[in-house]
Length: 298
Image (cartoon, rainbow, N blue to C red; front, side, top):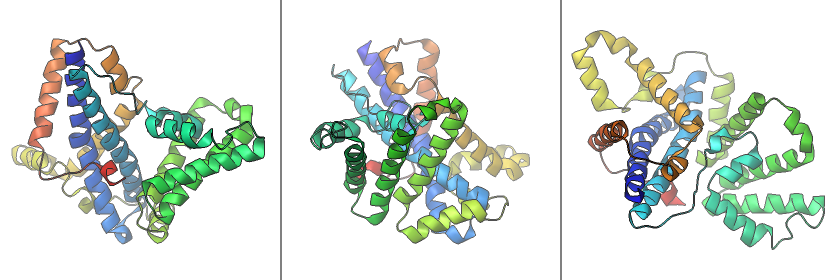
């Protein structure tokens, strides 16, 4: 069973990386290269695309690592627990990059006094660990600002206390997810000017259809084959590609059970093996060059 679960994790991680993270990465790179040409919907595609790219890239390689470890009889700690289903920023950080959060809590937050030295000191400690988290990812002002945003959000949630729980769950999810998306803009941006430009386009840009250039290179082989077999669908291909990619991406991040949880209760079935074999083969055939994991930079 461990071997089967390991293979399952490796296949799921490969699919996440190649069929989801990499296509989102193409859209994100296209958008950042032509910020001035983005419409409002196009800007939101870039923002949401990076949110999904980052998750699928990082959690994908964690799934591959966990699967390989299972083949050797080793259980690695869970690093992602469906973070984009969180209803608060505090919950998000209990689900996102759990090993880093645990390290910062055990080795920095607690030694600083944690929450045992009064409210004011607690808030200062929270801000410190998130500034350190930002600096850990990169020695740049945008990374520090990203960390500061998350620190301030956690302080605000503590100040609100139980009042936050009275807000309907769906609204809390929308606010949390929107905040995470906006914060990731500063994480990805080369500088503040670029981040503000993208956010400005998203909020005040022209409400027009995104340019076809934004999807250039996304599933290029598959798109060419479909258009050759079914020429009539060519005018709709951009819409179909975008809807399918973002629809599947959001479905996967919001599923009640993620890969790590599925591996724990995995029992091999014929249809699962066939589906994973097809998706893995598709992922292998989709390799178009050398790609790197985003987190290899941190």
